[in-house]
Image (tube, rainbow, N blue to C red):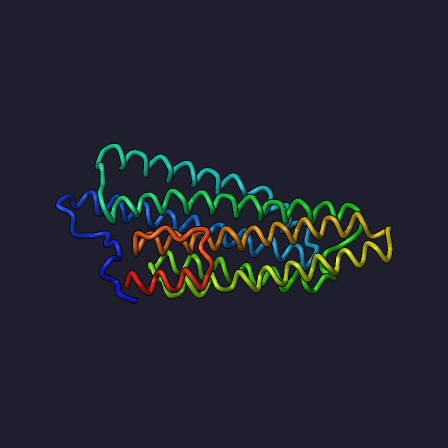
Length: 242
């Protein structure tokens, strides 16, 4: 990819401005790391029925919320004080959008822990659903790659990650079909199957939020809003920009 349009966090007359932008960017990456850990722990809780891990996922959500508030306040202060333009403004806008999605991913991870605790309390489990594990692995990798794309401002990685959304949707639909079949065959499984379906929905939403982060990377680098654009059309539009 051509990096001529990529934002640079250096070269301002004010060294302090450079430092402020770099500090905020690093805080976003730290928040992303915490969110990624939450998601992995949530998935681990589902696959092992580990109540201790599930409780930790639920209890640690406040840390992500606090980071979102802190980063949001710093961005607003910079916008008011520095009145940035061009790529610097895009960077701050992308950060504000990214931390919102990260916070929502944290919320979905918290749901995984909570739903698993409910399953444990009922004497059932989600670990027998292999398709749920596959879905968890897919969205966990998507989140990792989305954060990597943001860290390196890598549009190629962002686009490849966006493409993975098709596979997540197929896995989700396949799991839902399996759950519907199970409920029809044995009504006694309805409560368990519903809880598992809620877990699957939370994982699918994590994938969606990861895609959003990738779209912000494209906006950050090329100044092009690519939300709600089909993948094939998206590739063509990016090719026209570079």
